[in-house]
Image 1 (cartoon, rainbow, N blue to C red):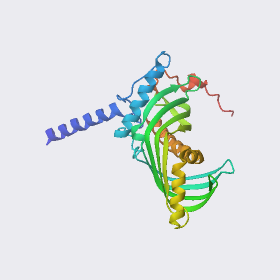
Image 2: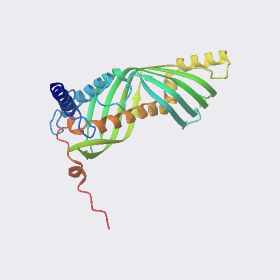
Image 3: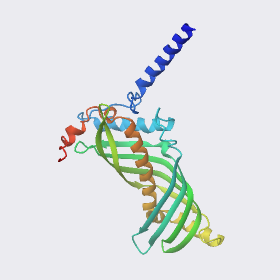
Image 4: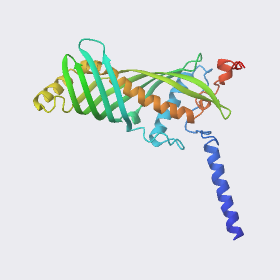
Length: 274
């Protein structure tokens, strides 16, 4: 009996050791072997950082061990998006998307990753060969001078999307490491094509619905411009949610090995007045 108990304690001890090597005691990763460490002081930092962020996106497909807050990266699910857009006579929209499913982020190809020493914000450029969106929509307003008032399902299929992401961060300390607090994410995009379909655009008038959808697909560049805010906000909502969770879990030191502490970057905090 004592031998059995001793073996049990040994097994438990080995498990605890294995967990401590992978994950910190206060819930963060301490040995991400799949991330390439880079020095921002090195002249080839941008190339190194580009490889590092590509490795991160690749790992997201398999799942980052211990990071349970991201259930699925591809497909990615959003509960609801509300957008009001009105920047011309041709475009005046109120859009709500629900039960949104986005496919394509699993094939992210990082073209360039820059980190700026002044404030450790980022500029990241990547491509998505395909990005498909499916969900429920309600739409009221005008696209390309066409009055619309409908509820149904929407399908968007963008070809060869190039995304430029501008990310703001604020460093903070935890467990002896520097971490990124991702505070803002803004994106711009370009695409080589856009297929779309909106069901029930005109409350059951199938002929008018089909002719309008054909017009949208024949004039996809104009439609992409009209839906620019809808698409960018969808991408921003996804990336901000994912990045916040990742960089709260993985220390910034593993991406930029010579990153300063918050005190070194911002100066020591002034004591609060009594």
